[in-house]
Amino acid sequence: MMELVLSLAIGILTASGVWLILRPRTFQVITGLCLLSYAVNLFIFSMGRLTLAQPPILPRGGLVNPELYADPLPQALVLTAIVISFATTALFLVVMMAARGLTGTDHVDGREPDA
View 1 (cartoon, rainbow, N blue to C red):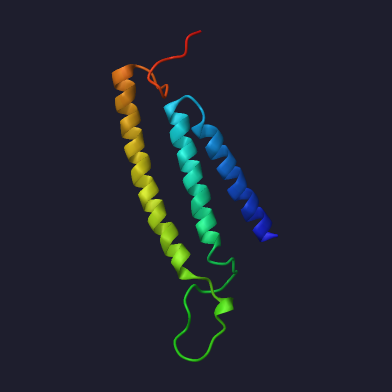
View 2 (view 1 turned 45 degrees about the horizontal axis):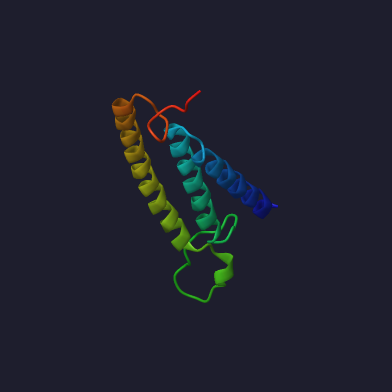
């Protein structure tokens, strides 16, 4: 059941992100990129196995069953990806504000469509 919920969440985030990237406004494009990064983070996080009430590291000594434990590598990758996506989102917002100041519009090609 948990796998179904996570798969649906990843699919909905991906579809929403792609739809927003195809929109003509820069803020919508940036929001779409954020949603896509969230979907990718959830996907990478789910690759470390979905386990409940299990530590991500193995205890010291003795033989243990590694299938009972979560993989810590995807968790570290997702943590790094969150920091990088925050920095790139901040950069995109600064570029968007500068482009808005130069062109006077937030349309992706710098001009409003002819009506």
